[in-house]
Amino acid sequence: MPESLSRSYAKFVYSLTYDPLPTQIVDKLKASILHAMVVSLIGAKTQHGKSAIALIKEEDSKPDGATILFDGTKATRGGAAFANSKLMHATNQTDSYRMLIHPGPCIIPAALATAELNGSSGQEFITALAAGYEVEARIAGDFIPTTQARGFRCSPIYGTLGAAITTAKLLGLDENQIVTALALACTFAAGTTEGPRVSGREMMFHEPQATRAGITAGLLAKENLHGSETCLEGDAGFYNAFTGNNRGELIYPFTCQPGDPPPTADIAQTIEGLGSRWELLHVTPKVYPTAGYNCPVIELTTRARVNNNVAPEDIENIHVEMNWLETSYPSPAFPNQDRSMPGVGSTHYFVAYTWVHGSYPPLRQRLDPGPGETALEKAVIDLQEKVTVTGHKERTNFAPKITIRTKSGKELSDEFNGNELKWNLSTEIKRISTLFDDMAWPRTQLDELVSIVSKLDSEPSIAGLIGTCVPAQTE
Image (spheres, helix red, strand yellow):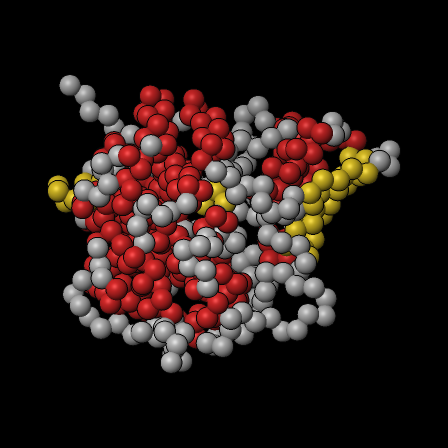
């Protein structure tokens, strides 16, 4: 009888150490850490961020607990992680894997809280992140669109598992306990797509709750409960619940060609190449405060605007081609109709705004026109009516194509291949540091944050990492 998936993942997690981690993996994780920490400081200034901090300070304060970023207050492990997850998710600038899951705001807050309380080293912190990111990405994989089509929002569903694995690794759980942590996480996972379907905002707290649930799964596993070995692939297991069957039959694929047979995915193949082929390398940071699929569109439009100096008034039309799932969010089964037509916050809007202004500001949270923006915003509103967006099943995620036709009849085009935003630490530093002068946080601490993240694997603890993201101590 083949080994269960949970057992295979548990063996991988239990045996994983820092030294064999490829340099590319460590670098990628550092980029995600830096991105999440900086975004948490931005998110703390939003109403959602402030509310999360206030809630946890009132309900979960604990003087010897874990640290709430930006604020510096101590809270319970789960409480601090809940608040920090919200800060990392408040502006919609998290990281993303295959568009629909966001590992960072679930895994990193869970790791911060437990590593701080344990006094874990930088290497132990990074290793636990590697375990959580890799297991979550592999379990999710090709099943993401099908889970979303079942009415579940993928990010918290799979994020609960990632947070549990990371917590289990930092707690030093043995192989059997890791199996149990995963089994518990499978039963704790929750989150629906009704909010995204009708523009409800309950999804703003999906990741924080998933983070807390994952941590709880890891902590309970220490009690030597007996978790189900077949928690993932069993007849009534995770895949059956969240994809509709345990045979790998999919409702929707990410991509397909005309005439392809009904989509399937081999559940057993999710463990293939563990430790040698790394799915976490495909994680993409979101630098703009919008849905992930809009970020490459903004980047591509910026490049096209630079390379083709065409005034907005000289444009006849702009056509954007994207992956079909990106144009039917949150799922073709439950599309949000407001996102498919021109309007503030739509893909049409971001294309028009970027073409009119030449770029889109990563710190811009307000979409409605402000003082002094009326004339330019009128140009944006006018231009977005000339933008059309179509989805294609054969086009991969985060790989838009843009075609501009001028009134003189000239046609210009440019496209991405889907890998442009999967950047490393060097690029993350270059991109994120351009925001520092405009952030309401001391520049000296932000520069120190970059320095500490860069050498995190030589740090004896993560105290310095956290210290750069809380108010500096004064004499």
